[in-house]
Image (cartoon, rainbow, N blue to C red; front, side):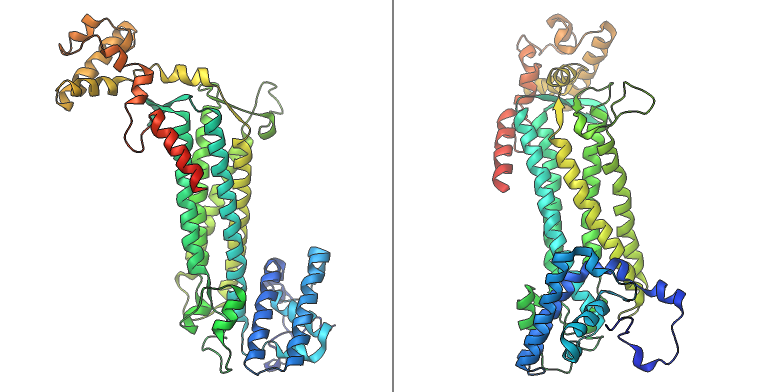
Length: 461
């Protein structure tokens, strides 16, 4: 076995310091690139054969050896990757390949460097993770639509500044988050498109002198195109920053959703109840039911924000081309991918374990002068300029406050003191049903518009 064999030892005569060796070693985390790196090696092997750099027999031997490694990994899992001597995943694969097929395995690295090798493997791995994140986002969107459908007629107070503002359909609230996650999916798709460019063939920094058909290799790996500049290709980590940035927005949206539900689950609001499946209790206070799942999602957003900033800081002052600093990109990217996917999965589970207290939410949407804007709009429809209508409605609210009555509870004569244009039909206009129904323009919360939006959302999935 070629344990401990370095990929770069020919120029060196002394021994590496053990402490530095541990500090330098990345196999503890970049082993996650094993499958992606093997696939990149298979494509490179095919490219070498097509270019006449290796023979048919050598191509078959190397490819068979790589496929054997992949099969062994699938069988044994992480135990197959247990090796305290490997510097990184690339040296591990090469040493195990040579153990398997002999010296012919040493020919595989012809025409490539670890610089373009790792850039390719990371893009392949992150391409798959982006697809998994998209699927998890779709799961949250589906859960939101299912929740909206199960409470199709429910009403909820809408808020600005955390003050009751206007009533909205609960389904409209669900669709607001659906739209946020739709934008997140678009951003990830755009990031994936720029990610899906192959750097392999750029070698260390200047390109390769071997006549490898890079387009052929790119097709083998499912890349859309090949990089246009070798210096940029080996030093580019924009795709990592883009993924982390898009992920940060995913987490921001998950955190906002979590915060809404945490607030709505409080005794003070009482609009929703979480099932026992996604809540915990207190070690001291028997009555408590804590929204820990949501609080963890809210808290985990911070680590993803940190990774996005760390990646930006990492590349900020790097000269061309590859620098060892880039080894630090992987743990940030790996943890971002894990955290986002797990948070999305947990959020989808929470949404399937939420019960809306429809009566309580409707009652809350019916008080607090939430029809004051409707009163102003009613006066506008009577020909009153909006600023005057707004002033009159505000004075009506003040009057109602002094008597402890809602606008629709005031006598007609009282309302007419503030505007003679008010007539008996004002009570219909101020009703909860009419307040919702009038918001019938595109994007509004009227029942008809919300039904259309739900259907369109389903169709988009």
